[in-house]
Image 1: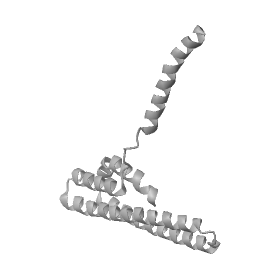
Image 2 (image 1 turned 90 degrees about the horizontal axis):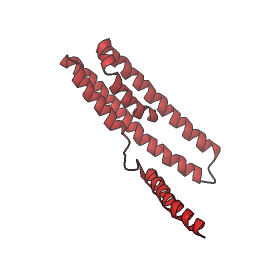
Image 3 (image 1 turned 60 degrees about the vertical axis):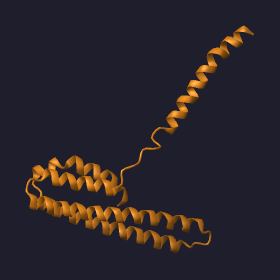
Image 4 (image 1 turned 180 degrees about the vertical axis):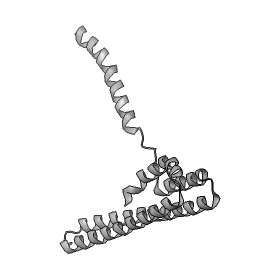
Length: 152
């Protein structure tokens, strides 16, 4: 009986500690908000203004970053709308395959159009910035794209 009580005296606090650690780790990061395309492209725009010395070129490049911002914010809204449309279609037992095909075709066409616009902006940005400025903006561009490319 003493052995059982001694074992319980050791195991019980360890069990409570383990449950506490598991509970805290499950809650970790729940309050952390993910960066939005709006925030990331605005940070990129600000980084352009801080990096490019020539005010005229900085302004032109920042305007292009603003166009990217508008594009990705619209893409995020469209993504949410598409997600709801898909959920609605999927929940409808009577939905025909053609409805799904039309939905996916429309979604893919919109994505291709956004990708084309991004490439056009990318090409214009390359013409405005020097190779050195492009390199200096690499981290800001990577951070913005990590968030934004999910929506293309």
